[in-house]
Image: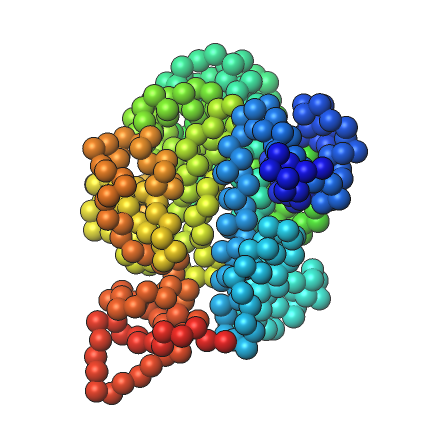
Length: 480
């Protein structure tokens, strides 16, 4: 069935991902679009084209930005494939970029399988062959033995948005019917009266290295005195998520397919954390406030009694149809550059097998801990983003333990930046962006004084007579 332009559009995998992100069955979306479920099935299997009218009806019915939804996953999958096939292992294969884009668009499952296979290969290459073999005997692949990456993939596949948990959290707040400042008391009462769970804030010498512990036998939730007020409310909401939303969480986990026990437990904890944040910052109220305040993170934190990191994380989840927020990405790093958290509801190409670019000012926050930094960054392909960054401190550590510090980076594509208070007065079309790369091993920018290693796609050039700005010189020609 041709479109208005006469071109047949076969976008089955893309259409299926849109449906799954909406949390709809084939029958439900067919009813919404006024077509038969069998036709939806044929579209998703690429056995029938989708017309422009159907795409427009999809966008109108579910308030979708088809440009974002149609390209975000493909861009992420393409970035992953490009990173994998830049490895010297594939040096002799001349693989055109267009073929990688075609693969990312038409075969996302193959992309995911290749990413898992490459992850297992890199782990083995780092000298963990014995561990990989042991895990293979038990579970199958070394990638499966890394539950953090597995769960990160599941979060990204759902665009960090889980409508069942959003609805449950809003229902909870409606039932409690208390302002933000009364949330801790209301949650404490609910746990005690509905679930016979007593909440106790305990001294640090009793809790020692533990910030939260649920004593099943005594039915007590113990929270360390080191946890601040927003953290205490979060821990109470987390416990309610486990006891009241267990069925919803298990249903989401079951949709993920086979998971080993570690990944399954981590996914459940992650989803309970998601519910806790949604309970503290209910979707509609938080989205409305974010839009009205031009995404001022500090004011949002004050209004919802939440921490800077909690608010930034919550901003990456605003993907509800008819009430979408700016599609943010988030990164958390320590002062050694280790990435401990990354989420993206947009198209930022995070690297799965390396660190971040030192020219991104998220690293500068450790030198200016009381300042929020903003920056326009530009990737080698010319894509521009606007980001803010600030250092945060985790729960207080008793002396003489070191105070945990992390840097939070929050950003979006430059086309969304005008909605942010941090870009007020900036000419976003003319402002010069800081040239960064995904990481050094994939970045082909020359003469970078911050370069830690040469790109794996170029041949290293060594010259005893010359010292360049960069510690590494390399050829202009891509290695094949």
